Length: 583
Ligand SMILES: Nc1ncnc2c1ncn2[C@@H]1O[C@H](COP(=O)(O)OP(=O)(O)OP(=O)(O)O)[C@@H](O)[C@H]1O
Image 1 (cartoon, rainbow, N blue to C red):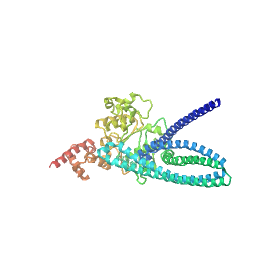
Image 2: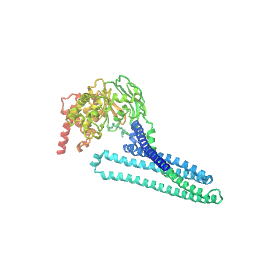
Image 3: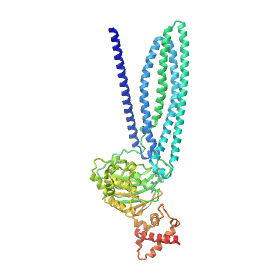
């Protein structure tokens, strides 16, 4: 009775210990899984954010998100789960083989001969599985790209009523993923079939050879039965090791290939500069710069571009669309590197500057400013610590944004929405200008930064940028009113600097700039060109202009280059054109 009790107690203790160990193992593996996942995601995100801008030109956001979410999850979950099974199965296999050898070493050798064969078969299938898994991940990433592009640009999709086609595109890509999954299922199915064949072969051989050993008294019948039971357990464990563990691990390797590739990728444009002088004067020099974008290696966007900008100068970059103006700005921001030649800031190559220092002292307001899904205040003080509301309000006033912000229901705490979608184009631009001004930059780059503003707001912003005394301003603009007041205008055409000088000088020179101004004043350089405008040739401009000059006989020679005079000419021309149309 006493012995019975102690056996029961012992068994209960064992049960409790076993349950506790199991719970501990499950908990530890869960924690490991999430820790591993977080670490991989962090490494991947860190690596992605350090890549050069050219990387983002070729790899789409959808793919990146897919790698960051689905692939990292598959990688970590599969690795950790399978490592768990791998360890358990491996220990079990070693134990079972030990027992089998003790029962009959001869039969054990026969069994162990089969193991390398199973290993080779697993390897071959594993290789295929890895390949299919990679294709599945890539195909899934493509589908994600479409979803990301469609949702991110839903207004454009809706305005073209193209929802159905986008859904079809998405569905086609999912169909491709589905077919790849079928391939994977077939592979797994055939792997199982081959495995069963091996199982059967092993069973028949063991029985045949075991029977022979019993008949020749080299083994007892009881040992043969015990051996056979162990063999069954060994097969079950091996099946786990091959189908569940090896195959799944290969799948995880397939999913992780791109993740690891992205983590290990070394950026082609390094931000390793150390230079951070206490004072930056803001002089800029482009020295024989040749440049092409990484995604279009053969097209030279800048061809031997050279120009200098003195500290405190306001320089306008003008030229036809696609001539390379924004590319100059991109180089000043060190987004890309030149093929040859140098971009110098205060006499030092731009890449020699410390990344954080450079982007604090050289501020950019881009063509399509992007705001973040946070409050307007946080958007203005983006990437800056300890910015007071007063500082934010001050720059908002300078950017002519204060009034509209205070009229919003929650003022500076109003959410801007994803990519600033809850604000109008002009409001976004003003917030972006305030975001640049708050840095008190030594160089301010305005790339079509005021294109969506009305003329009053534009004037106020211009004033604010000019109030940045002693600071260099580079303005890229198509609008004449924005560029005419610049200290110097640099005209870029087809990637080359073709002219530079003040507005009046360039008008007198009657070159590319003068032609552009005349076209603009005649309303030909806008997207809503009228038929009458379209039919005008260069000669027409000269005729009409000289006509208007004659009409205004009191104007001096200089007046020809005066924008107000040209605007008057434009008005007269428009009136004449409408008269002609009426007739
Ligand atoms: N990321 C890029 N990858 C490849 N080519 C590019 C890229 N960005 C611009 N380009 C090409 O470089 C050329 C110059 O472009 P850029 O944006 O500098 O012109 P731009 O003068 O600023 O034009 P716009 O006045 O229309 O803004 C164009 O032919 C354009 O197609």
